[in-house]
Length: 148
Image (cartoon, rainbow, N blue to C red; front, side, top):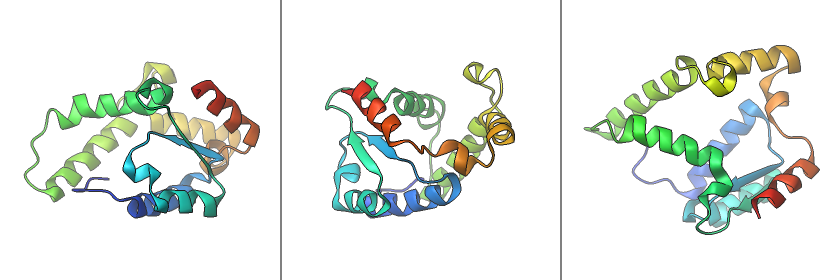
């Protein structure tokens, strides 16, 4: 989502929308930014029964998947475009996101796009809501221990 500033309450609303599509995660891992450490996120996580874990300060490698995505987005989009307005930024971001998910294959996905991989996963494991949401609290604890 593109905006001039994104508060924790807005993130909580966006997370609610993601939960409706993909299901509720057992846990979430984030950095220690103010948007993720605010009362709105802690309240959301508590109400949804989602364990929220923070990476250690100065250790972005503990959240390598999102850091890799952020780097790709920065290199391929934000450093290459000049946005005239917020609406222009939203439009360009939507086009980039479509391309990222539906057009560009990834070697890590067997040279499929993320959309193709998701469809294949749904064929074998059912709807994405069940396939992508963690169901095992122990898995969350294992992932958290790996971060520490």
